[in-house]
Image (cartoon, rainbow, N blue to C red):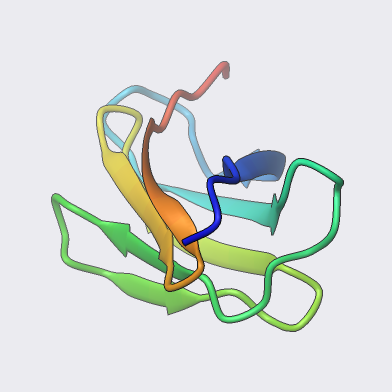
Length: 87
């Protein structure tokens, strides 16, 4: 199994006016060489919402600032990431 670390670049987080509201998180999954990872599995632990990254590695999911998302792929190590809203 490849020992690459998955990186997530968050592009947009909006619909967040307070710490209690959900916001829409969109990002891209890439490997250490910045190649997009398609068919990555994104899972929100709190709400059990699932998403799959597209061919260009882009995904989107609704989250709360206190949520943790799990990103996994069959060829890469699973990564747990906290969702943080800066607005």
